[in-house]
Length: 559
Image (tube, rainbow, N blue to C red; front, side):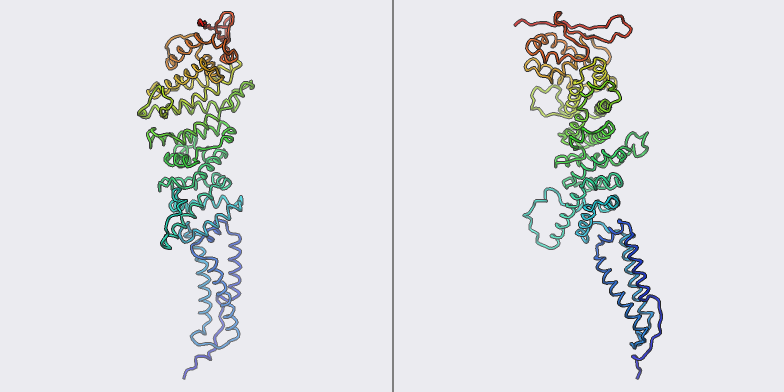
């Protein structure tokens, strides 16, 4: 009879307890000094990797320790287990398998947001964002890019957020709803201002991928509005962001031609409009921040708005009410709302206020030239006698032009500054040679002339300082004498003729009724000759011996 319990094994050392301790210490050190990117990947693995690792270490550690003692003491064991090489091979293979699993999730196939890790994914992302480490956030911003499509696809939409009457009949459906809730919360979580600031500075591609995912899945009713708004704000505040490297192509190369950041955020008008109607869009910037912008920031914002306008005409042909663009035009108007400060600044050419005004006028000019290349909006009404008549896109542009004119009309003196700002910067931009004499341009000019004249006519019924500014501006840029239709004067000739007629017949009555408002109508070099009952416009002398002057005789109507 063969005795299988009395074999004395030979001592061999391939992966003993000492080797295990050394490997374990090395693994701990590597994990400690490892970048946050790989620790994040390990933490969100779709399997309980830390728990598996712990129990594996316990098993391997005690196994190697017991086996080393057993074979060192030459204790008896069955013959088929008496080879120490087998034990060390098993424990060594187990430890190697554990390391390979870590490498697989950390480097080979990093985990994404999915049904197997959605809870731990949210918890780990929440912990890192709340911690707010300046070194960790940029890395996590880049790492989040890999899960952008799945988060957007899975997220619950607004219409289903408060739907508490849904009868969840199965565990699968409950799990699906739970995943949707977590994806929804992640979209709210990444709207953190600090997180967005780091994303713009270090990983704008992540923001691009999120918006591309929304366009790809056509999911516009998810809570990404705050994220879009904060991304835009941080991109505008950071003058070294990708937004400022997307200017003209001859300056920025391919990035300037493609404009990946601006196109992804503002190119899909359906996305921008949906976000705007739900509260926030990439173009919705706070009034206080708009007032603090410099000319470079206004120019970058105008470039974003222009891309949105292009998407508006591409998708909707300009027929729908543009909620997002309406608010964006208000921001552009507010960006030059402090032009009145130029009254107290002698050297105004180099001021940021003057530069911002030029940027806004250039934007309007480019916008009109863009409309010239589009189809005329169907149903456009030139003169709207009924105030309740629905407005079209031309009306929004004209309203913006009117507000700019109203702002610059606050600059009243000296005469050379007043003329330079009123005519050279604004009027020449709106009616000058930079605009084509196309049908769209004629429509806008007609509407602007009508709007300006209607405002002037308000002075007759209710004298006010707003209308007086408009009248003073028009008299300053067009003059007191009508020289007929010639050159680009043709575009504003009807307004000039109607304004001169109105002033001739109504100004003296305005002087009698409200002399302060009447004086507010005189801007620049225009003055009122009370004895001669006429208006006088004085030009710069130049090489003449006397200052050239224009006169407009006024009529006093019989009571």
